[in-house]
Amino acid sequence: MRYAAIDVGSNAVRLLIAEIIENNGSISFKKNTLIRVPVRLGDDAFLNKHISEKKTTDLLKSMQAFRNLMDVYKVGDYMACATSAMREAANGQEVVDKIMAEANIDLQIVHGETEAKIIYNSHAEINIDKSKNYLYIDVGGGSTELSLFSNGELLASQSFNLGTIRILDNQDKDETWNEMKDFIREHTKGLKNIFGIGTGGNINKLYKLSQEKDGAALSYIKLRALYNYLDSFSLKDRINVLGLNQDRADVIIPACEIYLTVLKCANIKSIYVPTVGMVDGIIQTLIEKNYQSAT
Image (cartoon, rainbow, N blue to C red; front, side, top):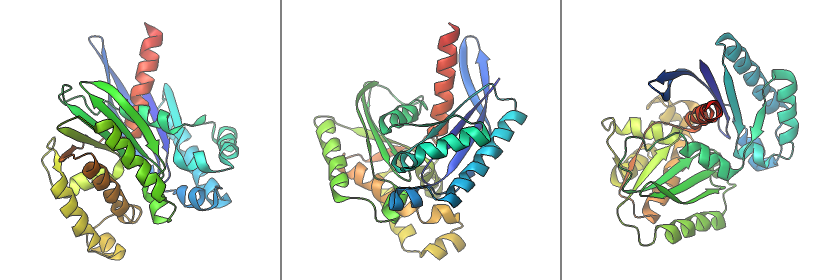
């Protein structure tokens, strides 16, 4: 059995095809194919509140390719989610309808709170001590999702309109930064020794660049040093000298700024990076949906 997850984000669209593994009553998955296409819907959505014809065509072609791959892999079930950029585009539903008609993919525009729940569903905490306090931080192109856990229980979760593409396009607002800081201060008050858990493409890349051992936490100090190092290079040199992909080389700087702001505000000294994201959470959501309906 294979499931597929499609994440239509503000920076890129992704397809994950996963093998579902059943073993003695437990169900898990193994990643088979992961494809990422840097469509950058956020450039249209955050500046013009409208997805242009060109971006719509690029997205539609990507979805048609994803549909063909899902058919070839004989995917048993799938879930396709669109996040911040499509939420803000006035013609978001029109684009969704076009994708259904021409790519036969049922794309859902999900609210920020739903996005946060799906990201948490990635089970990023699976190898982490549940008796401790954790702040999940997922930084995307258009939004940042924060979820606070203590002793394995969800205390608070919220989505904020702060993201890498939004910052690059100067569409972030001071009041949103302050709203996020107020949320962190209010809900972490009285909690000691909070650890961060970072998900998403940017923190995964930062973790790889840090050369930390697998499973080891990345310290705030090392993350700040890495930020200063990357910021010392021009965009061109981050691509040509450091070897970053063009669509990663620019967003990694504002991503660092968001992570560092959250960690400092919550007085978090280190962050775990389990290298999972939205697509992992979608696959897990599908497993839980189908497993529960079968019991």
